[in-house]
Length: 112
Length: 115
Image (cartoon, rainbow over all chains, first blue to last red; front, top):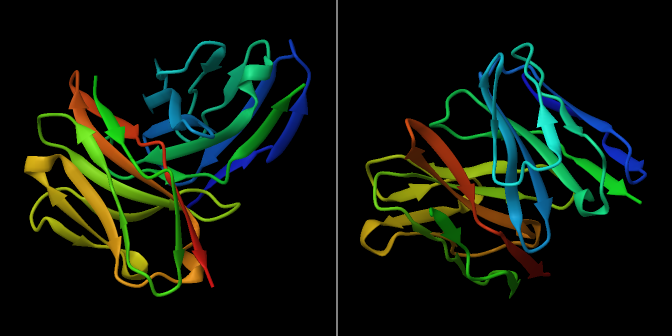
């Protein structure tokens, strides 16, 4: 069955370190998204991609970057981790920007 | 700016009670509407969706939602909740923006069902 996987599932890092969260989907979807989930804020879009070599900023993109070199993967990089980036991160994909999104299991990141 | 409002942040119900969760959006054009559910410790999954046609949409696990265009609302309902419905529920709107579609999520409603 097609799926989205995220790794690691849990990560503790120190302030100032670079961190990369992996997202891999086997749906063969063109569209991929990264969200962060925080209490009281719901899901907020960080970055998204509509295809290989395409990346776009979401509403909370500062301090994050993504790259899309193939259809299956959209890694999220925190350039210099900050305590404000402690959150749960979800990756999602969709067949079309028009349709529903399929979510991965999430990565819980703690920045100390 | 487009937005999605979920006015009930926390809801506590007893089993067999009826449920209605509110969702309002601000966008004047054609939208696609979704409800997602996140069970404790799990990822979000689609509960139901509305694109067009019958404004009363039926989803999984006995949930339904009604699209009322004049009220910009897409409220989620279930006649009789179960303990297993304890979860967080997110309303989402997909609206055309600058030649593509933009997804906007509400802040979520945490439902606790007491056995």
